[in-house]
Length: 125
Length: 473
Picture: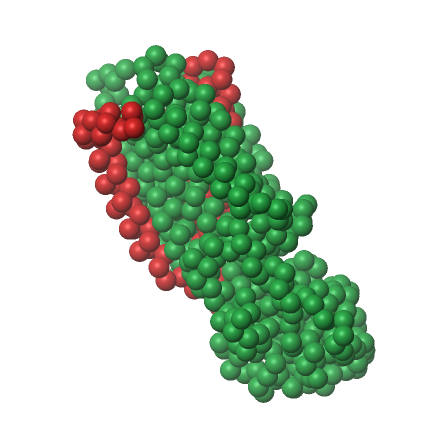
């Protein structure tokens, strides 16, 4: 009750939050639209691939790491970067490995091992 | 902080983020089509790489040597752990791996939100109420996803039973925990203090565990898809906290597509999403039905030698693989059997149910790994069309996906689920570990069918005996 009026006042006072909400709603529609028709054999790779995409939280983890002050923030930031890296790197690699085995037709194998180039630069980036 | 030099750099950074967002949308689009799936995933990886690389131009990160070094160490550590694990892990363990990668993502999102809140508090000014709200949402959803995925991992890894874990008053306790979480959110919003946020973090972890414990094996893949969607939303929430459009869009894309994917998966199992959600979040309606009275009915068991002869002299054999095949790691032996039969001129193919294995599409991955040619895998409808002309339907570790109750028993939990019509084949061979019912926990009439022969034992051992028997026949 006490926080309600200030909340509204703040919402009214910030254009930023409304812009972000707009982006949020539009992105939700895109997300729904993009995967509306997927054959069942691709459900697992799609789940795994979208799992890798939310690993981009690494960008957020790096951002907080940049501005972290004090031991607590540094430890939490370090953990966040570590976990997010596991998510994004592991997610893309495992999805690639899964999809590598899907042969569209028996004699039409996609050239393998392309993904290695994408993993390694992250260590040095 | 923003100097004349770094201003254009900030714009460049935002533009790279925008390109990455477009890359993610195309990646998701590609992942939905068999032809472009792999390229889609690679595009997503490239987009992520570009976004992460440009993030190092952040002035705060660039100019703080210690923080930069720590960030790099954490990334190297993460990569060093993730790549070998992702490359080495057995294909059968794929669902667990997806669960754990999803969980750490949720954990990272919760940590990002909470650390930003700490940072704002340390700066001395109380953050705006809506910022606190964003943080609370991020912490709540991210932690539930983290803890839930951890339990899903433990269940799939069979460190604890895959069956639903229930205890008296479970629903009531969950409701109390959820209500306490809501109350804490209100307190934190009103006071703006940090203490309730920590307590919320703890409660959210408990909630994640409590929500997943009562969910049985068959629903776990759908659950992981749902938790995947949750992590997406937690990432979006941390994007709100950090004013970062990339995180908002990428997180929301995954959150929204995850919901749709969850629905697609549940409809492949012949169930509606509300039904999945309802039974997933508490009611264990499917777990215990109909194990009664089995002992009084007779089944016919056979020997591997007899069945080997039957297979060897059949014209058409349909192999119906299921969860048990994955558990027994028998996909290579089953291919040997198929090869041995094909060598004798038997027309043999695999009938793949959409939810065979532990996740939708999982069986295709497992058999592809064992080098079963793609042409030999037939989807359910195509396989059913040929079933009535098959001499033998060989059911390896499948149960619910061939259970006629899905068509004949309106009260059955799996009623309405499309099944493979193994009962239409002239002979049915079941390779089973025991008379234990399948995931859905319901009895299978097909086991008592006069056309059915049962071979008890580990699927891998039995298949090896069958290969030997076929070769000798």
